[in-house]
Length: 435
Image 1 (cartoon, rainbow, N blue to C red):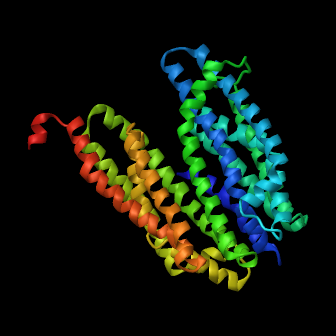
Image 2 (cartoon, helix red, strand yellow):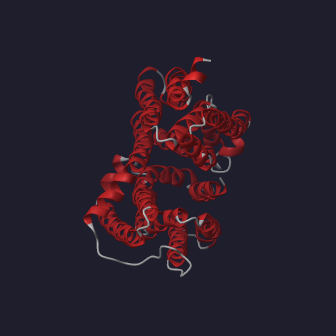
């Protein structure tokens, strides 16, 4: 959870400082909101290779095949470097049409283009740092894995105000600070993986097609889910641009950027809770302890519910305390506060989703977890297309509340009516079932 907290800090610190730029802060903040889904989608490639490679390496270690484990790590490095170079070249070539496709306006383009171009130039460091960090975690070096994120976040926090305000670089300073922090993280991770104390050390080797396919196939699920999440954010920005027009569209996208920043604060520590409890689910499922699994679901929901409930009360009562971190303009701050309230009225439903979906995933019940996750996203997409047809486009932020509420109800019904009975039949002896 602490590591996810710093990951959250890493994600939103640029937006906080950029939003405080005199006169152009709102436009610059909206520009980052336009870039964010595409840049996060790029990072998804790092998780695909990192998670897939770390899992393959762990399997090889379990089979006592250290040579293959070393080869997996070497192939993962080559994959990350190859993907990084390919993505850098392609995205730089198509950045102008891509940014307009994502919802950019003529007013925003100079800011968006500057931020996007500088950020993409650091793709090699970004993918290698994030992807290879998974290999530290897989070998049991969780403190070093967390420290790598802390280093990146700390450097970013220090450099952002210096480059933006002291050296007057504006949004270019924010992008440069992020790239430098990613380079620091990548150097630290590579240094750790090259350390003699590391069981599986980083060594370059020949690319093996079979291993690469294995790595990509294991990591594809995480990649697809991240890609889908960012596609939804892109759709929201496009809808706001289409129905909001030129000037109002920019304001609404700024509000959406603030809302997504708040949801990062919600999701990162909550994922830290559910990820940290994943081993509990896996262990007791393997041991056939149905009651322990039930207790784990209750405990995780209580933890996530307490954390998310605290944020929900705060943002409903004092939304301007949060939006004021990003926005100087008072009228835009009021608009962002209203948008944030609309989006989060059923925020507690997110706790239900995290507890059920991540718990089922940890037990290998992907056939149940994936539909629960996708159903909420489908409801959200339907809402953002339908609401502007029947009401003012500003009410599109209600899509978050509607999808959270319906998604939580659907998940709870399916969980208690289908999933729990199946778990009982699978794990409890016949005598206990009769009782």
